[in-house]
Length: 342
Image (cartoon, rainbow, N blue to C red; front, top):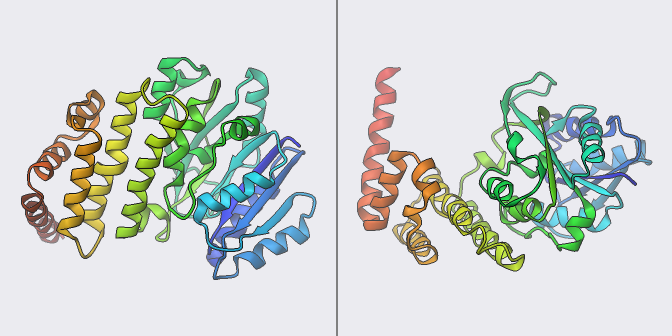
């Protein structure tokens, strides 16, 4: 079999989200493929929706019901263990793709001998094939047989896993299993999915539709989500050490960890979590400092981090209490300014 498409599903039946995703998958233009939909103990009608597709498209759709809620990483692992295709594609169950996306990615793989091929996606808030805001996922200079510079670039700007296909043999040989029971599972292992490849190819076209709605992971803030993102950062470093590329790409990994574990999590926590804890913010800053004492001197951090963010991070590193008070006043002032402009 040429391709296995793995779809982790959790509570996506409402508003036709899951059906729209599945419709785009059963109508792919390639002939030899399977869709493995893994229901992660949904509490809505998602499993019933999937069973209906399985009954109608028995030659394409296989549904697996997880015995417990394992989050997306666990559902992906279930799909990977069941997959028969030479190639693996992942898709979020509230997104959809153009009819020939996988045909085009596979054609590029066959033309070039690549073991990973990706494309771009567009952001959209409506169920349609109208191209919305295009989000470039990679760079043309990353294409080709991977050398040190290309791998360095892929760690810094690897893009999303869902817009790519991967040789299943590469995944299995390197045991690239996703962490279970946390969100941000792609962040934990995404570098390995790219760095361990030998050849990467990129189509600079938006073939994937990334649906924006209020229940998306990126729009949901809680202390637990912040915990998961920090754990994903720790696992990202452990993955690099396990596969032997930690030392070679230390500056890139240091910067990636700083963003994932600390900077993005810190500002997500401050902006989105209602009951902010001094001890929580202090512990986050302390672990960042203990993991990479000189993170603020990293050349990528210096070049890519906004000046105001650098100022606030330096403030938190010096005094968590002062940082939290300042941030509260700053946020209140900005809200007051917004109110005045209305």
